[in-house]
Length: 414
Image: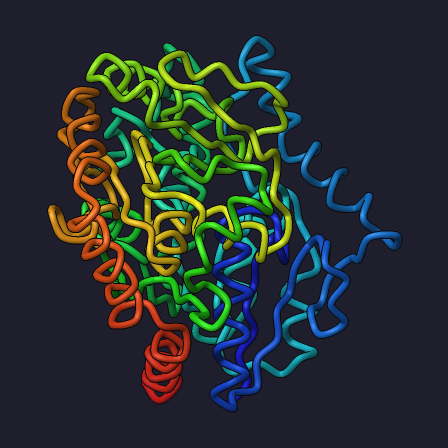
């Protein structure tokens, strides 16, 4: 059996990392699998896409063209939105590979058009990494639930019309995807529930399979050693926060974390606890409550593993999230996590065992979860062991790859 994984990038973003990890897991299990991308930042010759130094400008151009109608219609705003209207040659590239199953991941930024799916002519498995597949174009809907109907009057576009561009995108999906041989996979139970409530996807089979993680890479390191390596204090409790665009993407919740850290300081931890942030290009980060260290943007896995291992607690104050790679990675490195009880967080964090789930979006509740971990070294050590065990038992890469392989065999035989 031949499987073609499809993702816009080979390494930029959480979906890219999840897809590449799965590719490695499938190959380790002996499956013939390749990956088609629009930008090949790593230059891996086993991944089909435009490499750096080659036709990388294609990715930039297609991303800009995909956004062009939005910029013309809504020049004053810049939402996380994809129209997926540009034609492309992906179906032909996939056909030349002779694939039995196409496995889509994140295909936005002008990579795959809505209409292209019906040109693939093979069973399609689609792992959703956000809400775009069943929305009118946004990646995350926030408080809006119009995806349960037909979209229109999109709040992210500040639109006042029912027949706006979000309705146009939604209607195109309804027409193009009606009779697809499509199976939906969501990494979290929360996203599965959302998809089941969507008129666009509820007609299809929906399975929950989490992302997988290589536990030979993501594993605990000696805390003192990695702190010294990263230039972090060895005599403080460290609270780690990290994400892509960690301080600028409002969905990641850094503005809420500032409130949390101020509460922690007010509870007498100002001299005993410090914060660490990665994923932001800012050299100096003002987190208000506690002294804060910026590690910048970490591009290699070992540096990321070191950062997780250096921390006593990892925090994920996101206001909307699927199955956060950062939380899974931190747990694998034996670092308990605190997050709001939203999205896919309960799939990974067992409240009071390997971390805490705070009341959304209560800064006091979040701060209490952190303090409960750092105030008791004996409990923190137990939570650390349970964090690692959770990932071993639930998210180990070869086990997840086998689940996907079984699904491929089912959809091909059907």
